[in-house]
Length: 424
Image 1 (tube, helix red, strand yellow):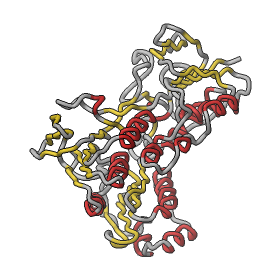
Image 2 (image 1 turned 60 degrees about the vertical axis):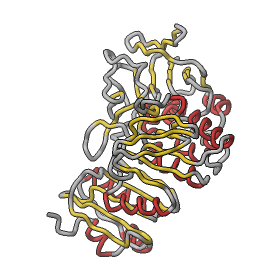
Image 3 (image 1 turned 90 degrees about the vertical axis):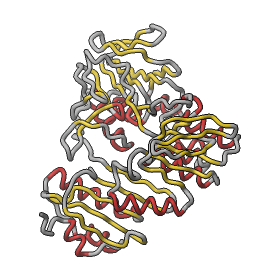
Image 4 (image 1 turned 180 degrees about the vertical axis):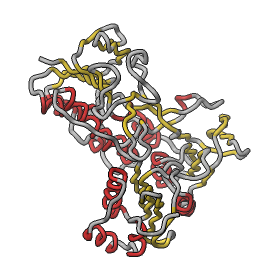
């Protein structure tokens, strides 16, 4: 009887466990989790803080007890793993307790990361990455009386935090050292339009300006920015970035870059050890490089692939490409592809009203798309870009073209998006 270990029980860990059980009904599966929560969706934490969903709404697979009983898991919760000895096939806990395994999945995810700021103790700031982060912020907002806030990080998470604070009547400033919002996803014209709309909602933008230091005042904090300006706030939320939780892995045994390097089977460089989710660097289809792609669907595919191979089945996942889909402040933003790639820029619609699409056509066809204000076309466009990346060329079906035209895209734009336009 095989012994399987899973460290971390988020999306990747859950799908890994489920797939192992589907392929090995009798194997022993031990799950190691620092907390006692069921797997939750981090994308829903801001909705919980905003009061839009109940606490239970963040757990898409049900309670931990239900999951454990259904998958026949051995749970070790509330205890930290100190290290993995891949050669000895052993998981070592912080208290020295050891557990052996035949196959192991590392699915420890990533944690919020922020540099130290002079005058600001880490516990004084709020973050938005884990369920505990969400609980802390919600409790503060429910019990405190805040009039002003500084959110650092013009990311998908940052803007959702800005939205919920702004909706509560808190005067909020969004700051980032990058010169525009969503710097890794939005094209410049689209970013400027999003910024205009955000400012119209009463949000103060401090882009191209990094937080340098903080001074405590009688009513909050004096936040000194790199451009010389000062932002006064009584609440500071840091949504700057993440760092992979790789400390349990020995780099002498397991190849690590920013994350744990995996192949298309989710296998690491150590025999019998797999990794999936935000802790891993898998394939990025456009660049053909290894990259962390922090998406729920990506973690699910990786977890399924790892679980199948761990249990003796055959599965592979060649990777994904960068994409973001989010709704905030009465607008939709969708970004597909690497926005650093150059080419011919074509647009459809008016950027300040209704559906607007900006696409970049490279030598081999479509390389990236931004969509404002219509999530309904996102599936068609994503599928089309995926087929181009995979095969080098593709055409939209009559049904797909019909969907795009019905939603407001011009036939001439669709023709250019298919690569029929002259690309120089």
